Image (cartoon, rainbow, N blue to C red; front, side, top):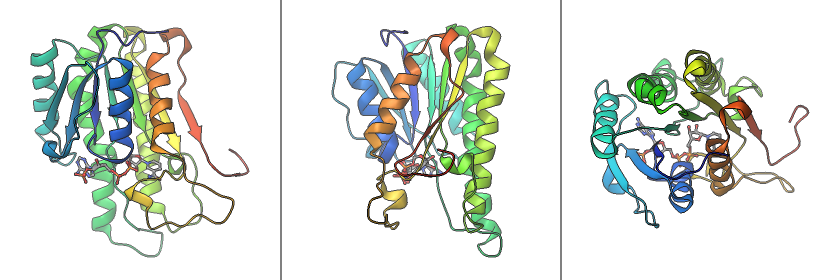
Length: 235
Ligand SMILES: NC(=O)c1ccc[n+]([C@@H]2O[C@H](COP(=O)([O-])OP(=O)(O)OC[C@H]3O[C@@H](n4cnc5c(N)ncnc54)[C@H](OP(=O)(O)O)[C@@H]3O)[C@@H](O)[C@H]2O)c1
């Protein structure tokens, strides 16, 4: 297993929800962290003895990715992993929802992460054991009904991003994993009630899965981890 010692990990959307839980878990494990958020002042300080950098990153910006990567490199001198976490959901189904909302999900859930990976790719390859953990969704691997089509489409594209990173980076030791949770207990789905006997996943369980993924050696990589809290026919 890979040790956290000396490894520098970037986490997007680290100020709340799943991203915050991941930052807390990786700090506790001993990683050096570069935490990005639209408003970096909202990132809650993480405990531990680690070196932590905070930086602005808006997924819709065409310049933030390069600036965040450059600042991270100047501060730490290396980048060993990126956790693509920031994301948005808007209602947009086959028959309803605006094209503007579909464009916003495409911009934040696919194009922003793509820009960030492109900016970090040379350093991830230099690392020799670079890792990308992509927080996708079960909506990236299946479509339940037609009412969530826009989000599902952006998350299916996100799965393609993970596979492209694996293909591109394989010979450099770069590995990428999609983590695909069902409903997670965060602001994003606070309006969704679960029926009796069904649950939401805790952000800490997703964070533990992300940390486990980062610890896997190059010869034991998993392309995708699906996490559910209820019974579905396939997962
Ligand atoms: N919650 C679920 O049920 C669930 C299930 C499966 C997958 N996911 C995925 O998990 C990831 C994290 O979601 P969450 O549940 O933690 O949601 P959340 O609590 O709503 O947090 C979303 C995060 O994304 C950031 N963000 C939104 N728009 C952004 C932008 N334009 N640029 C940069 N950051 C932006 C938010 O920053 P601000 O604070 O600035 O808005 C926040 O940090 C997302 O990719 C989501 O699709 C969530």
